[in-house]
Image (tube, rainbow, N blue to C red; front, top):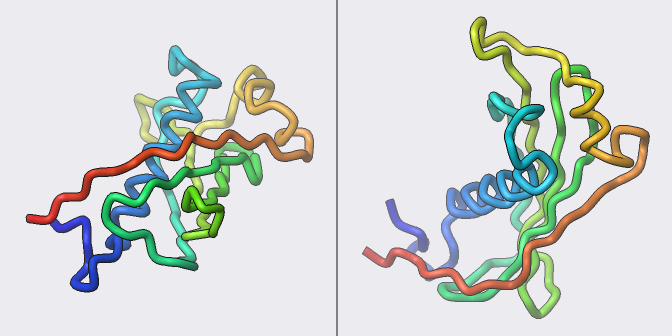
Length: 138
């Protein structure tokens, strides 16, 4: 699998991998022991590509909780080049599941509290610092 498309732009599947990494960092920051948001599955991902990222270009990913459902969390993302331009906007839905039945389970009251203001109607955003990424050219 290549990280760059034939025009030396970051390939679309790589954007999704960076969203996943940013979401995982965000969840670990608010729930370091994994008691409230694990296990879970990604039920949906949408990416709107706005501007190409090039090989080894530094960028950052902003993550926010956009919506809290009964058993799901919708995350919103923005990938920004370090020059401030928007490279992509995205959202994903993560569904909490019961470890034994593998069926959706409700978010706990403590889990909702950890989500902060968004679970009460406001947005909580965390952004990763700009960092260079090596891309696999093979």
